[in-house]
Amino acid sequence: MKWRALRWVSEFPTMVSNNECTRPLSVSSVSTSGARLSGFHNFEEGEKISISCLQQKIPATVVWVGEDAFGIEFMRPIGRKELSIIRKPGGTGNPAGVFREPVSGNRISGTQLSRPNPSISTDRARLLVQKILKTALCQKDGTSAEDF
Image: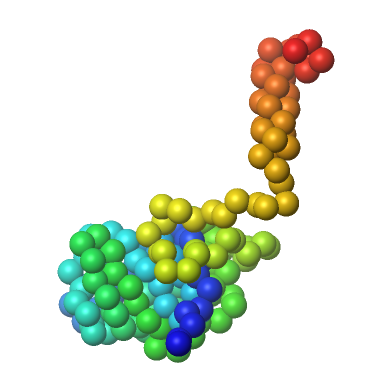
């Protein structure tokens, strides 16, 4: 059984090039071995492309194609520096200080990305949310949280 590398959710805008054109797309998830890109495209499976990161071209091969997304495999695994930049929301270039939650198992669609924290009970989480909301409302109104 082949294990996939950990993948992280991303919102990294990039330019994707092949021999014919260059177009802006978005990296929606990334690992050291490949990525999922979203946006209008006309790439085909097996096509050689490159994505831009840190003013460099990262060569890759298209491995699957969907209507508005496609998957690529990098010709060589990307380094920690490129990975931290691509997985940072908005692609600001600042390395991410904390690893983002990996995309779980076989799902990469982006619809179910976070896992519940088993160390926090539902009741405790509810109380924390209520406290945060009360504090925010009180700051807006200029009242005290004890008034509630």
